[in-house]
Every structure is written in C-alpha cells, then in structure tokens.
Length: 179
Image (cartoon, rainbow, N blue to C red; front, side, top):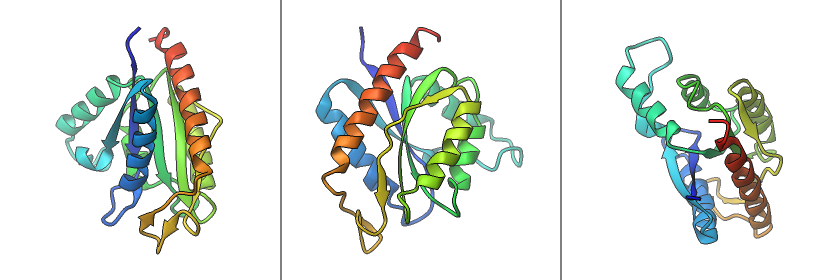
C-alpha cells in the first residue's frame, strides 16, 4: 500500500504570522516518522477572494485540486476572537467534496492554547464530513512562543503531535476505502 498524503493546512494569511513555524515543526516530526507524505499547504498561496464576491474559478479549481490529492489533514489554527480566522473559514467554504471522508488533526495556539478555535473548527469539519481526531496539541502563546513571534515548543508537545498523527493516519487510511 502506498503512503498516505497528509496536508498541513496553515490557517492564517496575515503578515507576520507564526503558523509557518508551527507547520514546519509538525512537518519535521511527520517526516521523521517516515510513515506518510507530509506537505505544507498554505491557504495564502491560493489567493481566494471572499466566497461569492469575485470570479475565483481559477483559484477555487487549484484549491480543490490540491485538496483532492490529500488523504488527510493537520490544521494549524490560531485563535482569533474565540474562533478560527476568516481566511480559514473562507478556504473551508471553497471546497465541499474534496474534504469529504477524510480525517484531520488540529494543532492550535493562542492565549488558552487555541482551544476555542479548535472546538469551533471541529463543528465545521463535521459538516464537511471530515473525521477530526481526539488528540489535540494546544500551544500557549505564553510558554511556546518567545516574544509572541518565535516558536519554541515545550518538549511535552512532541508526544501529543505523534499521538495526533497516529490517529490521523489510522482514520485517513480507513476512510480512503469510502472514497
């Protein structure tokens, strides 16, 4: 059986964001395991306008094509006003079938570890027929980021990331038969 393809979705597009640092950290852990093909998928690269406000056929096609290539996801989400970013919600809305019957893990960060954003995302994923896994690495802006801009995760998060990836791969493999 070939390796599963897991996309690490960066959930922010703003200038100065730290999600690329977190995404690269997750990818390095995944790559070190050697059990799947992990890749960073940056929603900023797709330049999706607000859904319904402009013709985005080209961007939507590229976005859906990328998602269709993936068997599962790890979302890197930051908490904005107790929720996910508008850019991530917009990107989620630009696809439907490409999300269906796949699994996802969530790595969140914020003042309370991004827990409220993760819970909000879980509800959206359920509507998109994405099976979200239980293990959830939650990073604190106060202890895992130096000056709010340099990512320095505590060692204890390694166990949670590996546990989350174990679950994402198990569910992604099982759900592949439904697609």
